[in-house]
Image (tube, rainbow, N blue to C red):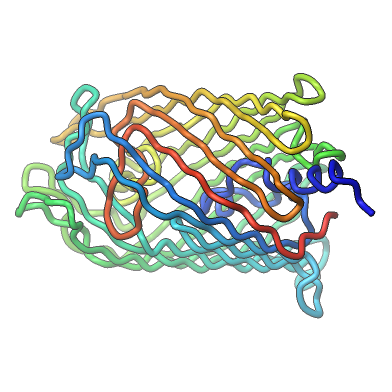
Length: 387
């Protein structure tokens, strides 16, 4: 019979990892996973508090529900490929990977991505305040086929085409009558991934302990967008082709047997005229942006982890007329914790503060956000199988 400490250690294997998000799946290719198969369900409450409430711009105090479901099976079907699926407030994701379809050590990947509840805040910074030209919301769905292989040990390269459909509508937040949201359009293009991965798991806990994963993504997109976007003073049209570059870093530095430094960083550089993508509300706005955390993960025994962190953001945003830009920096911090009651049930909570008005919405039906954010929920794992 397994001892209680061992059971709790097994629970730590997945739970002590940072909370998985839609962006983690679409912006990484082959992260280290502790489970070969698992169904993980998480549900709880998420809230936000604004330093200066202004419901007309979405800054308000609110508590809403939050949840996500994650499934993974590395022996799916007769071909024994890997099936992975995720559903949460931030998006939907499903992928099937097969190493035998093409052969010659080539991995074929079929992906579906969807973001049904997107918010856009078209605007600019005036000092520490964000001034909106207008608000709108929308959804997008994408299909992608990728072909990848290891160029050398630890270095993975993948390339493939994608097709995306986007739709838009006015937000419930008030916008000037003369603000024009984009019209629905379709887009297609190609994407390239480069990923260097040397992450090592702690065999006792199953959590990342050493090494890094660095992913760089480049894409070229063509679209059939028509019509203008914005107010008469700064109305623009989307170019027929745009480029984007994104990157993400996970770096784990062991400090002791029970403590690990973590560096998480995400960033992007996009075409200045890519006005839709530049004002997505779930990340820093602008055509150049960085979001980084310095974290210190501390294991308190076998059943609890506490991770305080410092956070910084950078945004380069065009000014109101679009003729020049501002470069803005934001700072904050918070803490994340896990408590494992058994190998299948855990409590997950976090709090964060950032002196930036542009934070993700805590609701899917309304754009509500603030500088303070907090979450508390339960995690249940079903059919978890270690590697």
